[in-house]
Structure formats: structure tokens, C-alpha cells
Image (cartoon, rainbow, N blue to C red):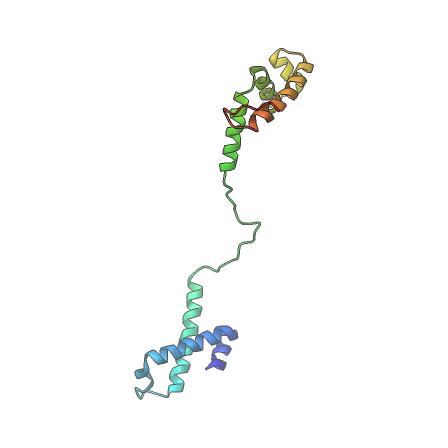
Length: 154
């Protein structure tokens, strides 16, 4: 039985599974073995062939399975961290002075150059540079501590 199943499947492990299934079927239906219609060997080999045929048909009935490569897998990242970060930044921006917030909005959010920001805000370019430097420092300080918590003097 094993040699016949191996010949049909061309896979030793699959053939062992087929033989095991055939023996289980023989165990469950002992009356089929002694009904006088043929030899037990013939019945078992027929069951082996039928199991292999059923397996092949089942495999062809559904689409071929293709392993996904890691580069093809679409990954939907959790955007919760991004939402929290933007909330912290927005809160920190709201806690800055109007002048500092306006400079940061012009330079970083709108992508303006120093000259463009100076023209839009009506201040000299040197003031834009100075305010952006101090605004970033203040933003870092404000974003680093929770709302309502004042920095203690050390």
C-alpha cells in the first residue's frame, strides 16, 4: 500500500498519510472487507487510489496558495501614536506666545523661508531666526511637561 501510494503521490510523507487514512477507513468499515466482492488487497488499493484522487481534486478546486513575500504584505500601521504626537504638539503650540507660534507656523508648517516668513509677519529676517530659535526651545520645554504642571526652580 505504501509503495503504491508513494508512486501515486511522489511524496513519501503524503503517501504515509494516505495509507493511514485507508487503514482508518478499513477499520471503520470492516463489513466492506468481507462482503465477498473481491480481495481485501484490491479493496485497500482502490481506497488508496480514491483518497489520492480526492486529494488532487480538492487541491485543484481551490486557487493555488502562494506565500506572500514580506515586501508584498500591505501593512496598516496604527496611527494612534501619530495622533497623540500631533495632539501634544498642538497643545504645546497653543501654550506658546503668539509671536513664537506665528514664526513656527510660517517656517515649519507652511514651509516658508526666513525671508518669506519675515515678509508675511512684517518683521526683519533676523527676528524670524531669533524667534524660531527661542520658540523651538520653549516648545521643547512646554511639550516635555504635562499641562498644568509648572517647572520647579532648581
